[in-house]
Image 1 (cartoon, rainbow, N blue to C red):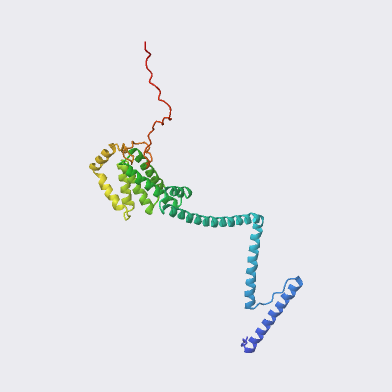
Image 2 (image 1 turned 45 degrees about the vertical axis):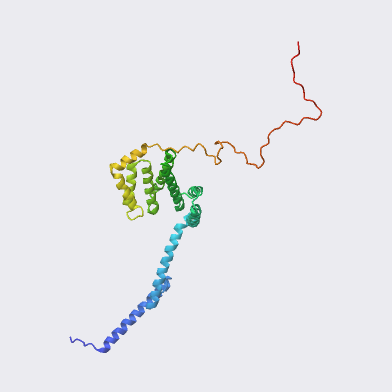
Length: 302
């Protein structure tokens, strides 16, 4: 059998018949969907497909949010109360911060008033009213330094009065160092405690304090003096001198016997106020005229 050669017209006819069959099939599907009550699906353009995809994603997001809200709805009251508590805590923290700043400013004002000029009672009030603030700590430091200076001067005059003042200074410095103070305040407190121990004859404690100043504050203003004191306390000669000095009994000198500014007045007496009128002397009264002087009594004659 002879094969038929493919002609151009045959190809076009075949394509046309195939398209007609597809169209008829689509119409049948649409008719079937209409009879079954299903929506008819129409061919979509590229832009329409993107919009549909976005709409599907939006619907999924909305469904997710709705499910989350449904899960949180039973706990909504507790959540609102928690948020209210957080807001209240934030407001309270801001208020406390402002109050703290105002308190610090007032403490520095009180401190400057107490040291210009130095008023021991005002310094004690600053330390009592503003504990834990920088101004209160500096007030404690100034009080300790005043006690140290007073005690060091009394060492050569009255040992009984010097020892309590030196101990008060040491306690004040130790109180400051309990807070691990650093900087200039810590340096001065460490040096002051070492000096107070040296004045009380506690050589080992004093030397350890001076070494701490030299090591912890090598570039500080008191580092050089601390190194000098360490060298002075290292040898036996220094220990011997402090041992001898501690054995001395310092008592205040006795007051002079005559402290009156007016010569010739015994001590403790009252001086009479000077007058220009000479002292009056008592004279006998004059006898009245015409009266005889009484005779002298004599013994009767026998």
